[in-house]
Image 1 (cartoon, protein in one colour):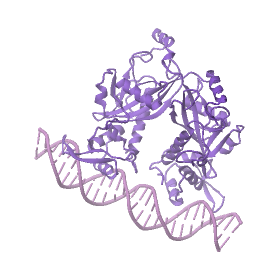
Image 2 (image 1 turned 90 degrees about the vertical axis):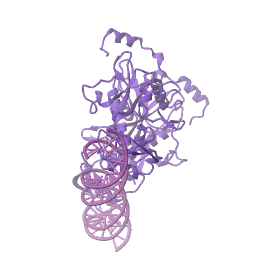
Image 3 (image 1 turned 120 degrees about the horizontal axis):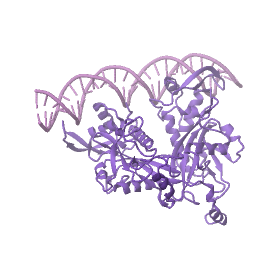
Image 4 (image 1 turned 180 degrees about the vertical axis):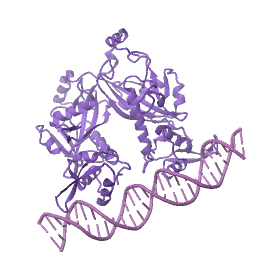
Length: 256
Length: 256
DNA sequence: GTAATAGTGTCTGTGAGACATTATGGC
DNA sequence: GCCATAATGTCTCACAGACACTATTAC
């Protein structure tokens, strides 16, 4: 058992042989999703340098010595967009950010060995992000991108293996909406049940039955809670809701 | 767009500045689970050196230059146990191995910055592994370990943050058994429905109703297929099954 | 009026939970 | 005989899918 400060450990720490491991760079990449105009969209950054100059890529960067991985993902996102995503600040809900998976195939970056820890995030703050000073960052509707099984083959191609990372992030989002209340992370409060349903429809790419969806959401304790207010767009005024305390749905809302 | 071999790219490759990123070691760690004597168990290795000398840790090691991450996980497991886990060789099913998540908090290894990509695996081959030449590797029942929410606080403590990795691996296994057919990866063929049910009970830590479980499994097309043979242990002879072609369960078998 | 969305009510089939009962082996 | 496990049958309740219908706004 290691006792901090013993001679054995100090000796070990100083004699640890760095040639035992291959040099690897570790980066974080973030798949930040939002729903704009009823379409699922992902934040991408135009690459300034080689390789893949001019192509669109996920925001991300190297892990700094004092970052933990979650912190690195948040920091990179804030650096590229000026907007903080995860958590809650001064009572304002800022969306959701969670680790997706890691990608480390040799050659996925032609410069050197890079292992990327990917994150996936959900946000409603697409206007704040698109309007930030990072003019090279914008949201792309995912079905305008060249991603197998999601966009069209002649869509916009992405840099590196980011098409696969986006695909995995979308699949994570689709699954999360089934068994958690995270669809509300795509919305600012207050929101209507129609807006919430359109989040599901955009993420799943399926239309949902209005009446059944309403019954399901309102019968799940803590999914949403009523504000008593109503909103007027087109059609009948809609009741306004805010997020409830529940995080998981049981039973789940299954994809059609 | 990058054209391989252009002057611009060649220049970039040679002028890439290694001081831009912090040195990080990348390792893989494997949470290999099995069911022995009706208890969920995990493969651990006794540490020979500092830090955490003498404590039990997950099998793992550095990612080699030509490994992809999945390959590194398989190789490390084979090096430590002499047994191949993932895939299928000569018609023999060798279990299941998938990426879990990555762990990279600063200080999680006192020697240096290490990012570990963790994998979780399921196997029936606990005898082959325990009987291999790696005498320092053995399966531990998870509830004999000091893992919050799973074992007892005075159980065997693990090295590094491996208690949390094991906990995350167990949670992944519990979730996977709900919506996939991977419970069969814990069993050699052929198997009885009673053996399959005891896998669920060991992983979930809950007892299941025999009749309802049978109805559910047999009514899911492709979960198992009958062999026509029967096995005799204690009680009435039980029909023997092998894995079917299905991989996902819909609807899922929900934990009680 | 029409169009569009919000909201309510009802029927029906599927499937899970609970329970009882029978079958077939070892001892 | 008893005990243990396998295997079958049945009742009931929850809930999702489908559908019809009403309500309230803008135009």
